[in-house]
Figure (spheres, rainbow, N blue to C red):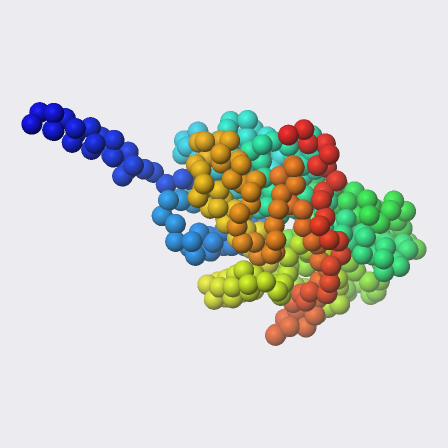
Length: 378
């Protein structure tokens, strides 16, 4: 009888931790206030939608606002990792914040899954086995537009972007496919809202077109001021400056603009159709590319958690590398530096139901791999 009681107690003790197992915590650091808030809101909402649809009770999402400040992002990361025991981080929008957070957290054994920021350093010489980017490397959409504008016969683009890591990557990426000979090149201030001086330089140049990367509120301000200026040169850019929120704020001034994106809401695959429909039903708006990236990031993480926990680093990393999930982009695979190899599309801003929207036009580059994978020593 004593032996039986001992066996029952041992079995109960063995079963106890399994019954009381805590959910895997995912820490999301993203921008929910200020001029770029809609980027973080859409990443958060797309991510949360994927978790809701999966019906998982083994995952807990912790979300905090970085207010687009590197020091705030670092403090949140420290709290998530050291106090909350988080082993998976995600959510950062801005590349300067990613550079402030990612190298430190991966050294602590934490996995970082980027739904947006893709600075060249983290794709190349500072790559890490625990760092994955489900969106793109910063240069990619700009390189695709450079290739497209060259094919379209444009001879003298004027190019501009804000002076921070993603901005320098943007213009470097554009010139990598278009060529270095441009009519003019300007780096603006990050967060700038007055572009009178830049528009005056465009007007005075011999440019035949304008390419710009100004995400969030910066893009809204520039497009409105450019349209009012009457300069009239055709405008091109990456999807970051022409997402559905920006188009709603800019209005008809954006009609006819072509932009490059790895995703479009009218991309024809079953996962994307269901995503766009369910996102609209839940949130009452058309998703942006940021929402699609949040959705894919969550489903990538869930697919890996089906195979292993982040505490088993090798197994979890290998599960992430497989990318065994249904992406809104269709087929999805990682390069050796944990950044996507993917098609990049051209979209055109057209009149929609009450406000402008993007319509898929075609493919700019097929199976594009970023330029920095060769520098990654993994």
